[in-house]
Image (cartoon, helix red, strand yellow):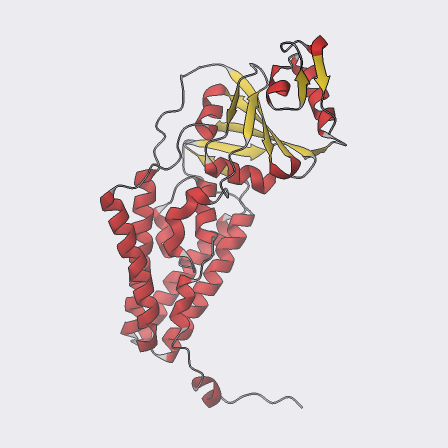
Length: 321
């Protein structure tokens, strides 16, 4: 027969280092910032490991800046927005094209299948705060409040850095379509108004931090590490409460990120349309798009075909891949 350990045994387990869970290098909050394009003040109630890493969100694309071509005009450039690149990496599938549509979305999107998990994480933090107050564990309460303060500092800085800035010359009432060639032979077709396409692919997503902003972020990071060191002063119930909150919140936010149906950036929404389309090779994709748009210069620029003389289709030489 199985034996149940007495409560005294559990009470003797040391959780003095439990606060170090807060400084685990998880990318959950970074990914959330990239998917929403910004940060909401409600996020101050979402506490999970890695909260001090939020300012690293622009690095989430792993430095990939894929080549891109305008299928309607033939112009070549790179997708400079790391948040957009990260979303394309999420939805891309090897030897498939994925069609996405860019549309205007004036409000910060908090609706969709991901909402329940996000609100559950918020409610969990509120419950943890109330429980800590009722138990009179003031060290644990101070640690939770400090984590929320560090979270708030990062949220404010993200919102300050998130400015649309330069996005090229305005081209109202003009529609366009792009072809993005990601690594691992993943291909993304992006359609929408030209101004909206520029908003999510060109320019800068987050500007560099000023000295004051960097100092605030550094102080918030030190605050998280300080909380990890002070966690040993909390009572056993407070430590369990803190560790449980961080771990469960990380899981809930991860589920919310996974169920995020669209990508938000500068009041625009990027959403997948239809299902990925498979191809036997990249040349088949080039042929299909050249026939649809009647141009070849974009295919030559992307290296999908090559030409010995100009960009006329009659002179194009196929690159078989």
